[in-house]
Each structure stands twice: as C-alpha cells, then as structure tokens.
Image (cartoon, rainbow, N blue to C red):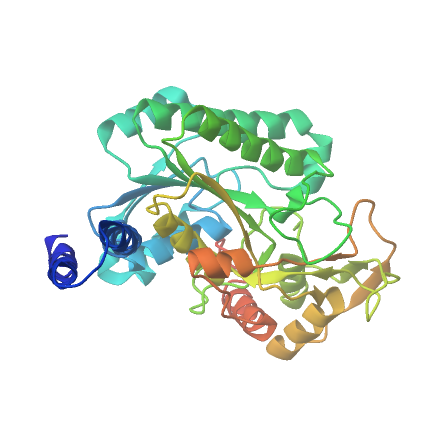
Length: 400
C-alpha cells in the first residue's frame, strides 16, 4: 500500500510548494487535500477488491456450492485464485459437480474443500467456523421448487429461513460479516411495468418466493442493527446454459421446474414433449417473456459482488443480474432447436395461475456499481445447454 501513497505525497508536496509562492488561501489547500483523500480512498478500495479479496489468502465459504449456480460460481472462484470451502447437504445436488469443477480449475482445484453439512445443523457449522477463518460467505443453499413450496410450505420455511438464520448467527459469532446472498427476481411478484428496477415494490406469489423476500428483510434488519455487516443481495432472473466445456451443468432431480432443463430432457428423449403454458399473452408470439441469463455470466456476477464488499460505502445493497432483454418461450425453443438440430414436439396448454406475462431486468445499477455486464446471448446459452445435455443426457448419473 506504501507504493500507492508515494505519488500522492509527492503531488501534495508539489501543490503545497506551489501554494506557498502564490496567493492561494488555506481553504483551497484544504479542499484540494480533501479531494485527494477522496480519490485515494476510492482507489484503495478498488485495489483491495482487485488484489486482496481475490488473493490466495482469501477463503470464501459457499453454501449450496454443489448445486447448478453454486458449482459454476465455485469454478469461477477457483480460477480467480480464491480458496473455496463448500457446504451442501446434497438434497438436490451432486458432489460430482464439485469434483468436475476441481478438474476444470486445473492446479487451482486443490484450493477447494467440501463438507456435507445442513445449515440447520448449528454444531456442525460452529465446528467448521471454529476450524478456519472465512473472509466472506456466498449463500446459495435453499430449496427452490415453486410447486413443491406450495404443497410443502413448512418444509421451505424450515429449510430456507431457519438455515439462513443459523448461518447468520454463526457468522456473527465468528466475526465474519461479509455476505453475498442468492436472492431472486421472484421477489418482484407480477410487476405492473418492465424492466424491473431494484426500487420496485417487492412481493411474492408463493412460499418459495416469500422465503427469498423474508431473507432479504432479515438481512436489511441485521444491517440496521449492526452496520459493521456488509451484505449484497443479488436478484437474478432465469439462469440457463452450462459451462462451455459441457462438463458441469444443470441436473435437477425429478420433473424440472424451469423451461430449459425440461427442453433439454425432451431433446435427449427423456420426456415425450414440451408443454408451453399460455399462448395468448400480449407478446409478439403469445408466449411469456423472461430475462434469461447464462449461468457463467451469473457466476461472474457473484465474483463482482464479492469484490464490491471491499467498498467502504457498501451497507446492504441490492442488484439485479440479468441481460436486460426479454425472450419469449418460443424464441428460446427455436434457438435450442437450432443449436441441437432437433425439432422439439410441443403441447400448447392454458396459462398457469400466477405466471407473469413479461418480466425482465433493468441492469444499469450492476453495470455501473459492480462493473459487471452479461456477455452471452440466447444462442450461446442454448449452444452450451445442448453441449452439456448431449454429453450428459442423465446429468451426473450414468446413462441408462
């Protein structure tokens, strides 16, 4: 850091010498030094974010790191030089995803360790935090099936809320107060206008969405009670795609809840047809419009958020992660058909209750403050999704 201070002191000295030979008031000198100090603080925070948090000495805990988004983020963290510790109860994930992420990271893969822990198991979490120091936590862990949450609301409130509360309690007890939370655009409910900005009122249409909303509120309350916390809430839209290698990707258990895993299962012959819910929306082709984002872009967004935690101005902040573009269901199907060379059988059905017509993100805040922007379009998303599906038709399970 002394290297940074040298030119600043030199500049200050030059200015003061100049001021001594000119008619400049002391107030001008003070104002100049205040501006210089502000520039130094801004530069120093970027320096720490770039060279300190991303260094090999930084240890990041990733909850739910064996899941779809988690495993891709773990890989990007490893490639970025972080030490990564993953905790996951493997309820809807596979440890194979972490093994493959390690392999993709090459020699940096040795910086990954895994512990099978349920966040509600406070003694196990306490033991882990007592054994090593974490610089920050990225919190993915949670159940996420909308339909199941309606049928089993208590399960979702227990797993998602209690697990998060236990995590926050243990973090506080061990003075680890930097958190990136995996929230969701589902907190916007059915927005009256688009694009969705971070200032939109929040609501939720189902228990899953309410767990995300409640956790956001818990984080805001926590920060208000103790401003030493630094928390970033990431609301992302519809993650799709896979790592370009086709070595890691999405592998949901049971019937997929989202469009693209269902599409890929139809393409590889695991399901007979894709059901399209709603063909009479006020969109160009009558189907619902969503903001799809490549999972690698999303993983990079988490790294950007992690770096932002070093900014002295950060308290509890919210950012949308999306492309800022809306794509209809039929447009995604057409792009996937082009990527796979397969014609997908479709079944047109009525709208599902609670489905919004058009939802996509306003991403200006993330672009400006996180210095992050999605790089990939729907053609790359579908290309990588098919690459993963064709190489792994049954996900991480052996071909049947």
